[in-house]
Image (cartoon, rainbow over all chains, first blue to last red; front, top):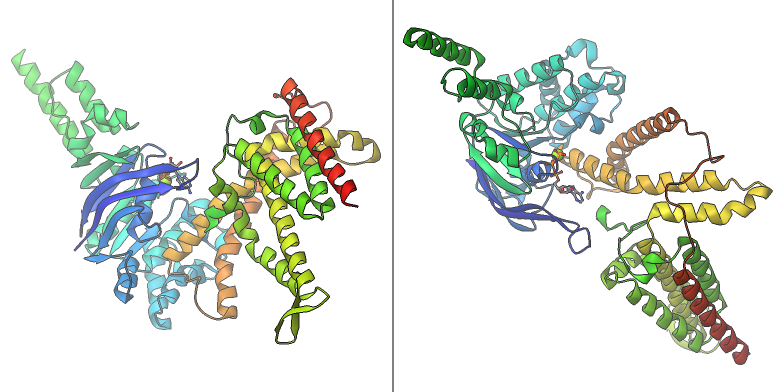
Length: 288
Length: 267
Ligand SMILES: Nc1ncnc2c1ncn2[C@@H]1O[C@H](COP(=O)(O)OP(=O)(O)OP(=O)(O)O)[C@@H](O)[C@H]1O
Ligand SMILES: [Mg+2]
């Protein structure tokens, strides 16, 4: 069980003077149960790639296979496969439209043809997930909320679909630090429950650190690097080429390693890193 | 789909048509449109079609783009053709149910179709080779003399600039909202009229909300840069007439004269 992207090329505005290859022969497999982060500079093709995962964009060339089904094929299995991929767009709060928050979150489940009782329980669970009090908010207009709360409603709208694969396109863009932390914690909790594979786009390496098990770096429509976070974060040259920077923790460790004492730079956990630095420092003291 | 909409589409280039002063281009388009309505013999049409093809060739823009610009008008053109087809007089050529197709109807229909196609193509030549900003500046400059009689030249051109500027933005926005709702299982292609109308709401409401938000932001941004209308405003890019404009306009006048002569001879 996995999402397989096979030699996908995508061209915007094909056959016009504005033609642009947003993806160039990209291949990658996202295993079920993993937490994958996709990073890249603005315009590197992240959103384009994500929109292939549930068939919103058809590859100009290549194939997208979800759980062994080519999602650009025909048949009822294709619809089920597409529906197993939930997509949270960049600035998802711009898609809200219903009169009440309840109705908006219920829009997706209703379209999927679920029954009333099931819809209500899913909306309840989804609102709980994004920490919106059900009783207090269910009958409010989504347009009466703050930007951060609207974002939570929009995300709840996708969570209520209970997707097996959850795709989030820069979910924290434009949020304040507290809201950002809360949202990332929510996503982590959902992932830890074990039923959901998470694919998250971000240019912020600090967000990715400690969450993802695998980082894919896109640059100019191509995969520039793919591997474990600790490994990717130390490929400074590759990251720089892709217009990214290592997380602040990695930057700090690299600086300590270069200028103070030799220490491993591949920690993704602040406590472990602090421990390692302190040990290295003590060793140095003894040797001197 | 949505990306097929070509209104206000501009293709940067270096052709003669790109380099002519936009004011001259607008006036020439105007004259051409008038001449389309003056034409009524086959020779006139042939001349205009040839002239049009030459212009399209000079513009160095793929012919495919011109074809694409015709696409949205297809149904209107077809409708006009059919209406004319059945409304001619004279001997019947073919009888369909209670309607008669006549020679005069057929030729009327064909001529009207050619007129419409020429109109669209000529307008496309103008918009394809002129950036929207330059176009509205030129319009403002052309409308200036009418300010005396109360035509708000600057305001009209500013409104057009803003409208043109936001067409692609709104198209992108619509595209994104449609995709977002599709991801939530919305189906825009099946069901009867009522269910389809209902399907439009999830697109229209977010679109309106975002259009108003953008308008609000734009107004604020303009105000905070002290925008207060056209009075005393200077331009970064001044428009100058060049020798090239003289040549082209001259050639154009010659072409119009030929048309007029043809028409006088025909009478
Ligand atoms: N609708 C579109 N029409 C034409 N070109 C597009 C369209 N959408 C994206 N592109 C182009 O494709 C390339 C990749 O865009 P994409 O949106 O995938 O980038 P991204 O990595 O998501 O960037 P960001 O971080 O800014 O969201 C960009 O160069 C962009 O200009
Ligand atoms: Mg993006």
